[in-house]
Length: 457
Image (tube, rainbow, N blue to C red; front, top):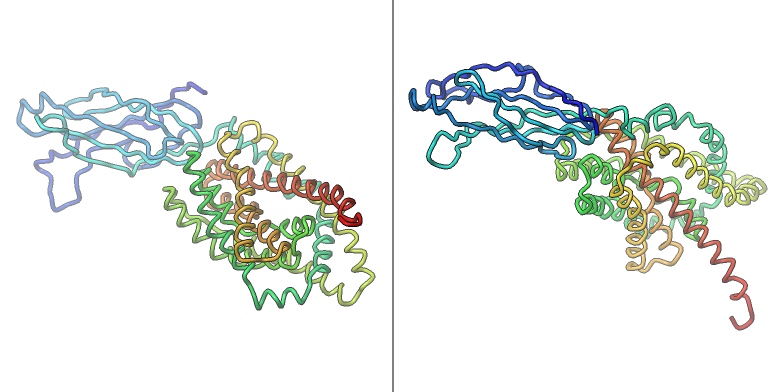
């Protein structure tokens, strides 16, 4: 950790009015001051030790003797210890009735930490009397050069993710693969979902009610910093990812249901994500205004709906092309899964070596919990096996890119980068875990099918 001593605020000591002469009809006299009072937020480097200096113009009443034996103290507490921790408070004295106090602090993760400052009068025989309490001063910690989240947005990081050559190579495969999924859509199944939308309702309940609650409880249990906790909650409030119907195909789920659930959850996310973000942001004590990327949500809808609709049209008009697309859908799906994992590891190579173990452990459990919740809900309602698998996958696989967009749009860069660790780890975990499930499913089919086809088996 850096040991540089930083004086973040220059002190200008000002004498306040005597409290006995203050006009009580006006606003209360403020005795505490940091700096010249023109600013109430101060920037501080990450991972450093330093001091701030607080002045007090308060003087006790009681005549000459009271002024000579003036006794007062200041208590300071950080309202976000992960960002700023208060090490000690020392009285540096002062001229006349004014006093000054040196507060030793240590900065931690990027973010903004309000300070709770209390001025106490000890010049009495009774218990200390609170003279003034202020929470309007805060310290913002900026990411340093060794911050892994800052490196994540470097030349090889998240900011250039869209310029990755692997992504450009995969885009044609993605488009063709979505067209192929359109050929798998069954109109009869779509009509059946309109009459009995139980799977769709289960998906919405699991994605936007149960998963955010789980993320909040998990963040409290793991004692995650506020930024990471909010990032985890936003990730679990996101709709189903575009890979949900891909995994449904490979694991024997209902592809038509998977596509329908992804489209419905993306539409619902436009209203559910702001509500969930506001609720859990309030519970976590994060007061930033969160911005939901409605343009990105619309783009996701179009990127799913257009090629799938084209595939449905091909199925009706061009049977020969349909057969070719259906033959390509499984190998293309495997390539896309592997390519997605490769890009995720490449994007996060710098952060993986420095990320904290608690958020890694929390991120790994999210897809597993979602799969179990979705499967349990589907089983309780008596859905058939393919639909059970699909509901489980849709609840367990989130569109983490939407959560990343929310983080980047809502916070200053340092806080946004740090909070983005959560959706990144969840995305990486879900892709890796789903690939393992697909490989296990393929291996199980190959091992069990020969014995099942024997006479009497």
